[in-house]
Length: 325
Image (cartoon, rainbow, N blue to C red; front, top):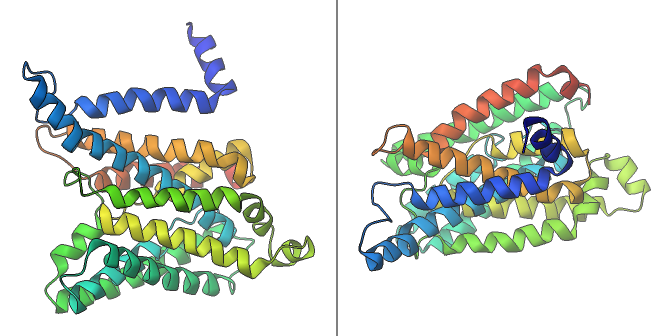
């Protein structure tokens, strides 16, 4: 296929192009690592694939897709394309919830920690959305700046509490997303994310109307409060599951939905498949890069994503056509 034809295929079929790239990266992810899966011992190769490589790859895909979708929902709730759950206080609140459980009930199960993280994320996100109502929606950068400041305040509160109880190491794990510890039996709770994604698909049209503003949405017959609460539950559940299982990954929920909305517009239902695949691709590429840059050592996917995501965020800010969209 020639260069122009290849570009034409990508432009006309972006979803298919994403799927093909995802399958290629999935195969690469299964083969990249210190241990080899091509040795003569096929039983050992299969055991490595099933106990480590495949669970890790599936966890990366689930995490990337869910965080991107959560970002899409969050941007609809905040009516701002520069908001991300992991930088606007939701992820930090989830870590605060896990920290509280660790202090009060150190032997609590992962499910209890997920529930506590989700509840704290719900409270933190609800407070954030309540506060930004006082800001002018005409300047998206003011909301974005406030989101970063708010996330920093919540994160600092969590750090102060963790320092007092000598738990800073644990907090660092929850706030630095990485997948090296993912193995069979340690990631399956992430499949609960599928429920949250199904809910997003169910309320997608309502979220699109919600993004038009309270007055317009109410005038069109939408129950604004109920839809807002459903969106809050989805964002909180995804953030709680992610932070409790693999840690926080910044910018996924900001860059991917914002870029897709530039291509497809603000129709949430239309954007969901492309956003989900885009999030999976971005996190999978970050995880693979982290495994290869200092091979045989690893750089956490959250660190790689922080660099890549920050660069992409700056690109969006300086893109005049995006700002005026």
